[in-house]
Image 1 (cartoon, rainbow, N blue to C red):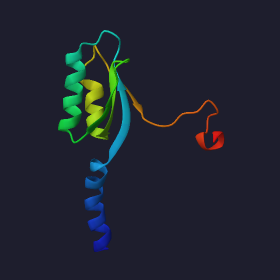
Image 2 (tube, rainbow, N blue to C red):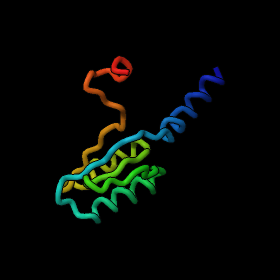
Image 3 (cartoon, helix red, strand yellow):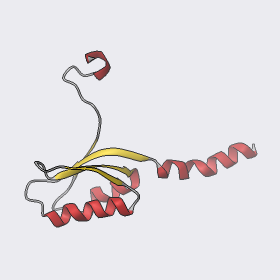
Length: 98
């Protein structure tokens, strides 16, 4: 029983530390300062910027889920679009397409 209780105490800490791989884009016309502030927020929360895009206004990152939730509610005028970074295929299932 003690082992289970200890596991329950540690589990939230482990979940809070897990990073999610995402692509974050902003609407056309979003000032660079807003994008830079979003990057700084994610890095301060323990995230890592993995790629900065030049053709689209955005970046790829690995960040804690709570930091992504905070980012999604920070700016209502230039609301970021946060998508999970994953392999997609025209055939639906990537494994079936290979």
